[in-house]
Image (cartoon, rainbow, N blue to C red):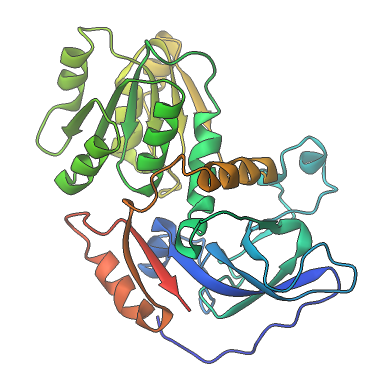
Length: 330
């Protein structure tokens, strides 16, 4: 990874030119940096979690120069069967800023279609606003379950950025009996600060035995998998009660092995959830404007874009998990 001079993009008709003010490094960006995923095709500019300000608009635009904005980076066609069904998040014809070979926002400027751009207001900082994207991922996942959660036992597997946001959104839904598992004591301490009732270091403790103990043998009603590897996917299933529901958010590994008989013979439900739609973005902007989510405690580091290559090296060696969300500032 290197810092390069690049051509300043030009906004076409129907696009706005956004000066990037803050861009988060996603775990998937680090996976791409390490060559562990086929979803980053070099050479390309990563970055899909970002905020900025409008610096140029087309004639008749609904935006004005100086507007503070966030960008929904999943570019959809709007006309395929899935878009027509309201599933723009899985549109097969679109692109994703900062993913595959589509250049993203780890740069000074991005030109993007108006339909993907959303204003925000209030006292929200650019750094906090860049967190709308991961918050929307968590928000869509939590929306996969309905009803009153006050009496439910819920397992969140993974205390990274997404897992900690899921935890906070579950708390807003009235959930109290939330168990968070992770390998990092630092991240588990952060989960306790943000409202987890119980935490388990699954590297030192037997997670299933702890869940059995904490729930008096009942096991959990719902689980949220926020990592995306074989062992954590298995944890999200084995912790469930009969008829329980697992929501899979993590997307690190393409292929995993699962116990099919466990799913069939105990009638488990596994629900996948992929990124977000425009309405999820709009709702998450409201949450951030209202100060309903603690984002500052998840942001570990804010640094200049020029330090990006070194920060990626640090994230690749982040064995204790003490670096959560890192924000680059062009």
